[in-house]
Image (cartoon, rainbow, N blue to C red):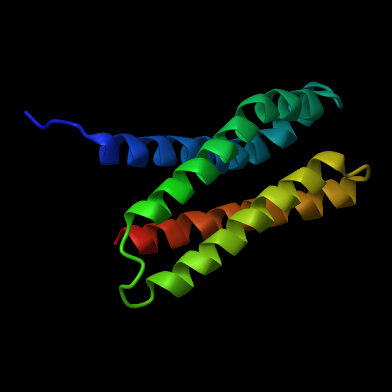
Length: 132
């Protein structure tokens, strides 16, 4: 039987948090049209509820991301540049999510929501590159 170690825990927490942050955004975006049919207030209510688990997941991602950086070989070819790009994209993902929550127009919520999803997906892709 395999014996889990601290590295396995670190990776598990990072992937779990990414699943919530990235996957939750995609699921919520897919549900918005149906929620609007239920009630005009339903998408906002669902978003407020999602926020309660999304932001803790984001901060777990940030914490385990720094933990990952401390544990990996950053001298390998391309790792430094990919890591810097990922850090920038994660910052953008958090910033656009914060702006999305504060937007007071439908257009603002749409633009910031799309930017949040795009940057979250790009961060996920860069993470896969770093893991490979």
